Figure 1 (tube, rainbow, N blue to C red):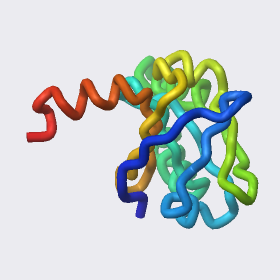
Figure 2: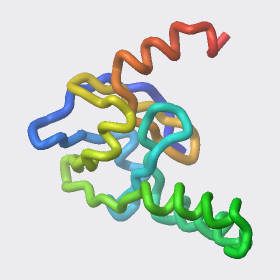
Figure 3: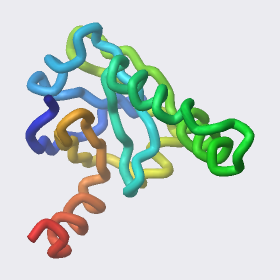
Figure 4: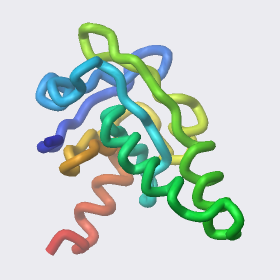
Length: 131
């Protein structure tokens, strides 16, 4: 399970270092990154992503909702490999979507982790939403 909150800086080439506590949850050092429903990037284990994908693929392709959801979910996700130090590159289109600049916050969110621009996370966490 992904737990905790970690404040970090992007390394050169837009690399993120996944904290060791979270890295230990990725059995093969691979993850799927995807657009979050909030202004963040979600990170999933391959197994969790496959389970979520199977649920999406049950929606009929013949319906507009089924097609749109597949287009949204699968076109905006990417598999990444972490090196031994837990470093991986967040693709430009995901960084742009989440407004990720230099300082980031990575939070554990149960079955996934989230990567936030620090200012965005601070705004959300200070907005009273968590009361």
